[in-house]
Image (tube, rainbow, N blue to C red):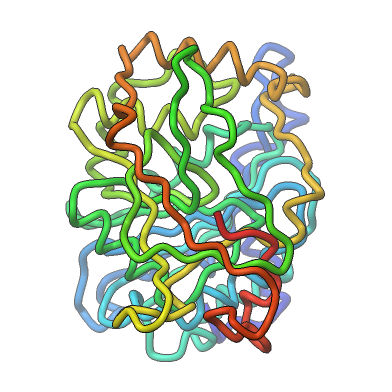
Length: 345
């Protein structure tokens, strides 16, 4: 794809059908694809063949953060020696990311790593759940890993490796964790918002569910969709943990982010939310702009549908070391992506 002229790339855009030719009873999204970003045939990839080992989905919605997140993916240590497929998954017309999708589709920008980039754009709003189907549309190895990223997260260049370690232990990896309360709700007090603070935790932390970033095995995601959610309005973060806990006894953990002198103390293992997270644009499902109002009711629906059993209180060890601004903070974030972190927990 890297040797095409701009004019040729422009011509490679296509849609399944001209919307004007559709009957009034057959509405469908306009789904453009960039042919130069699709996987090359096995013969042109050194004859190695086979699908991706890693499938990464970046969500494009209300924030102009795609280029920043692509730059975080570029140096990932997990890409070394593995085939990676990155899916840029866009809903609606809230951002114009054509130029960035084209740029990052160039093979040369990934150095020696085997990275394929696909841009999937649906003008039909698929809410919070659509992106959880995206990893299943590309060819992947049976033991492949998947990630789904919100558009307001920051992560170091060893973060994907940190997630793989957690997934290999039998749990979904998430950026933040939450517990379920005794009234079938998100337990109160689960998020600490810290500006210019740092937080560390020396061990992986187990939760009932989590959010912002999700990672697991492709076979788990297939199993989840074989037991589809009772609602697609809201609470996708709870659904993926609830269904996999019920059907495969897969847990949910936040990968460790230890402080010195821990041997794995490295900010590149860690993830956080960026300041842009404060400027939230709510998701839409179809034409429904009020799905966020259904958080409480969808949470209960999913809880009961999968007969969810929260972690016992005695097992809840949500321990973080909080480091206020000052010279004693464990990490010097100057000049790093993490310098833009707003909170860690």
